[in-house]
Amino acid sequence: MYYEENDMKQMAIKELMRECSAHITEKTKDIHSLVPGYGNVNSKIMFIAPCPSAKEEASGNFFEGGGGVVFDAFLERLDMKREDVYLTYAVKYRPYKINAKTGRILSRNLEDNEIMMFLPFLHREIELVKPMLIIPLGPTSHKVMHNLEAVKSEDVGMKTTIYIHDKPYDQIVLPHPSETSFVGATQSEELLKVLSDFKSDVEVDHPIEVEKPKKTNVPSMKEAEKPQVKKKIVLKQRKPRVSGKRKVILIYGGNNLANDPTLVAAERVSSVLSELNVSVKRLDLYQGDYNMDDFFEALSESEGVILATTVTWYGIGGLMQNFLDRCYESGQFPCFESVYLFGIVISKQAYERDALSHLLKSWDILGGVEGTTLCASIENSADLETDKILLNAIDKKAEDYYRVLNQQRNILPTSIRDNKVMMKLYVPSDEGQQENESEEISPGWERAFEGGSGTKSQISNYDEFIEKQQKDIEDIASLFKERLSNKGGLVQKTYPELFEYKFKPDKTFPDCIISWVIEDKKNESFILDFKSAKLKSKFGTDQDADVVMNCNHDIMKKITEGRLTVQRAFMTGEIKAKGNFTLLYKLDLLFAF
Image (cartoon, rainbow, N blue to C red; front, side):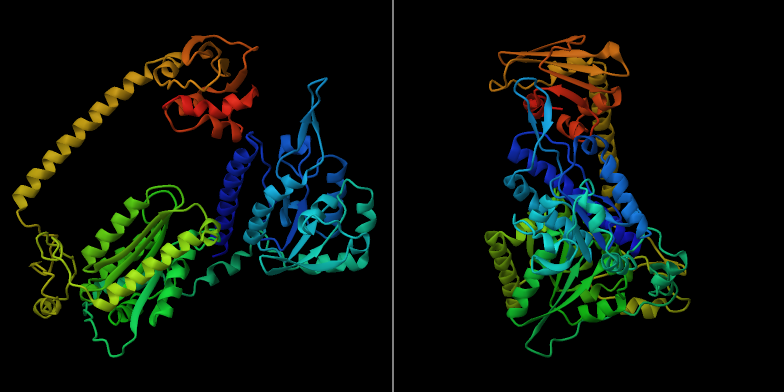
């Protein structure tokens, strides 16, 4: 569980950085190199520095130079290293200005609007790390944590309490390590004692190996499934409703990340149904300690099931798919009859419709009934929590689902439910019990036996089915042959030819010259000449071009194959560029890779 939580925190922080980078680029109309946080994401102590210097931005390291030596000595007195704490910046880029006379790039002081631009992302980073003690370093960091108000000198080195989104955090303000007052402020024995107390609670990245196997007291999936293979399956039947209060099971299949919008939607739906006098029982799949027998017992008494999952890249996710697989392998199809599904699928990027379709079809195969669906694409939970229109739409969906449950609407026939396509379940039977087991299967689901064991799936009109499969295979084979031939034609083109072939004219794009330098294959370097919404390309280099970009052959190949954008490659450091960055920002819109 520790390693899963650690990985989930790191993934959430990386996603937060990507979101922050896109937001800053949109606000400033400029591309910045952001410096992410560093250290142990499970640490109880979090240091907040104001912003990176030129050296720190270039290296990605915190506190370069003399300040770093002083800071490391301070941690050494506490018997700690940088890897034991978490370090981050309040403003994650270096504020700079250009000297009008010399053209040199110089550092400048942070402005209040820059602090406020990064503040929501800093608060979310704090919520993800969950420190017990926050230590702002320097007067600028003090202002960040106190709504741009300066901290009094007598408060330096004293433990106070601050509130972020109504949650209390302990705080000790200290000077920046590069300031001479830092050494004096950290000499206090009382301060060192307080920090040592927090240090004892720090969770290191290498927990004791003896404790690791003790975390799983719940029997594994394999142990729970072995008895089902060997013993006879006794099917549960649906129980009649004995009270006026309807029952629903909410099954959450996400990873329980702090910025998961599905969590917000599921809790909102649960709250609305509870207000409508519906009993909602929740099952969180990420905990992994659920018992299928208990689930089927609750399902036999419920009128509805809410399946809520998050699309992280494609599909319904491993937790939800594993749960549905176990439902199907159990053979408890009578429990699903006439149970109305509320499918909640929210994606952070795309493909939510595909996941919802998969969820509905799986429920149909199990024998359930489609009730209501909620399908959306929302990047993070904050966007959903602060949007009253979206929350109102979710409330309406929950009310619609309640009407479906309350009215018990008639069910339209489907091919699966009416056995036009027969689904067969392979269930091994004990010797001499074939007749007894076959009597326990519901009329809507048939079983066939061959000798002393179950047979494979049977399909009506088997010959037609095989013929259609062969035709589908031939169609797919011809399709891939065509794609491979087309791809081969594109690969043979040179980079100048490819860029001309994929060019999309844009009259708003200014006339300019862009030089691409392929560092590991200099002979493939080329120049793009944009003039009057037309493009001319040729091999060569031009150091006086408006933009000069350097990359290797592999990165250029990814760009021309559509697997990487120019902007993302630049932001991750895979492309080095100089010149007019505004042209670089618009370059992806000109080519249909």
